[in-house]
Image 1 (cartoon, one colour):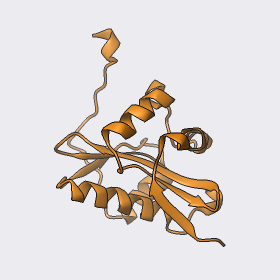
Image 2 (cartoon, one colour; image 1 turned 90 degrees about the vertical axis):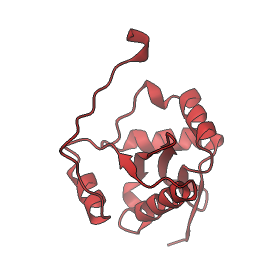
Image 3 (cartoon, helix red, strand yellow; image 1 turned 60 degrees about the horizontal axis):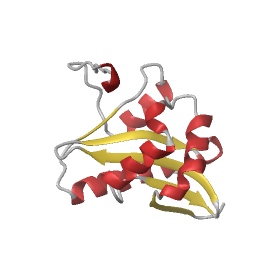
Image 4 (cartoon, helix red, strand yellow; image 1 turned 180 degrees about the vertical axis):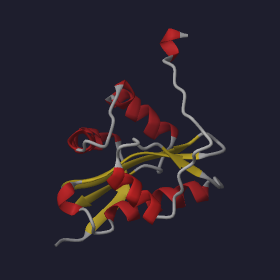
Length: 143
């Protein structure tokens, strides 16, 4: 077992990151996850998204950003062969540290209701489910 290196996500990580996310059923990809969209997200939130690598192999990734008031975590994924080694926990810790450096006091995430493994992970990490809010969405192009 080689050491895991966690570092900020870079533009040139996109192909490996999208392949990882695409291999995880619990990650819902959309048009917002194209290479130009992720590049824009990374540029808007520098040093806040992270990848985990073992040697040259990307084994984990997470997007993190903020809107000036709240932080948001998207698409946390760890390759199935590398789960239960603390990689997800360490990726999240890096995100929370990056948010804290920017004086962001609260972070939200989105998770599919049927993602029981993910729900257990987040609950074990001290996150709580909110039942007082609903998420509503609209495509901007439809406005």
